[in-house]
Length: 198
Length: 198
DNA sequence: CCTACCGATCGGTAGG
DNA sequence: CCTACCGATCGGTAGG
Image 1 (cartoon, chains in turn purple, red, yellow, orange):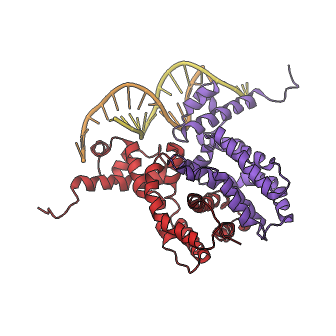
Image 2 (cartoon, chains in turn orange, purple, blue, brown):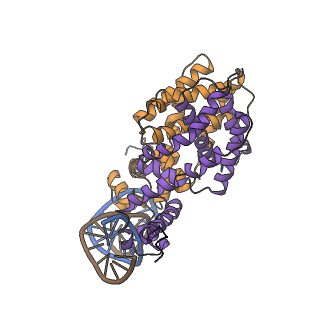
């Protein structure tokens, strides 16, 4: 019965495991996240997980591939409005700041990927990122942007957000307002000034 | 005997623990680094460690305070030569690239600090960084640099290196040369173009 | 013979 | 600084 439902029970359980693992990884990190916590969060026993994943590492692979921070950050940035490049980049920056402020933990996935896996899952993820950023790069090229390799433009553009957020974590607690006030605006401002033809 | 030796045995042991812990943290991360591994590396038993540190977290504090990546990166960058700002920043960038390439693991301390401690040790560390960067900032101000808050200039300057390295880990394995060739040069180039008066 | 999951337990290790 | 342990928990697997 209910043959029209194409999601099998197995797929639903697998999804529940990924959801649970995402929450536990983001809160605890990689090694401190136990299979038991993931199982409990998914509403099942530890043993059951192994019908869907060979182990913890395979679970993390599934999590990073479906929940990498870029999945939330990139659509936000790309959806930003703005007549010219300047307005667009500043709006994109502001949108990202708001998202990161409301959701400070999910970037932990990125740190786990760097620390524990040296970014090895990025090969696959890049296949998804590049086509999305391509139209933006073409828009950049058509405007008064300096002649820079498109790939580098993309890398530095993404790097701006990473630089902002890591320095925010690092310097945000130092207690010097001049280090944090309007920080993203300065990052995007310097990026734009550095990228636009004079 | 040997009263002229001002390093007590306790201090030497403490140092051996910090050295050992640094090596184990960098290789394994925080939770996967066990007290027994640290003890073995330091040439002692687990119990002995607790005569010098209250626990694992206190060891990490000592490690991050004496071995934070900036301890090696910043002197290198500050020692770079160059008649003008452009040459200096590019040389500094190149020196950092070489150091990071030869020593890719020690940045893991930074990831642990972000992931496990949300950058809480940076309050102390900043007290050490700021006086070192100050003369550089003043040199920047005296040249043809745009009017930007010195603190922001410092933050973005440091952010450039962070952005370079994290995108290097992320995109370095993707296998597209245009993403990696001369990458740091483009980062510093865009930073300089974005910071210098036109 | 399958998918999905159970309670119980394996050999080892965690911080203290 | 060590040996000898503790309560608990680790990732993973057994038979059913």
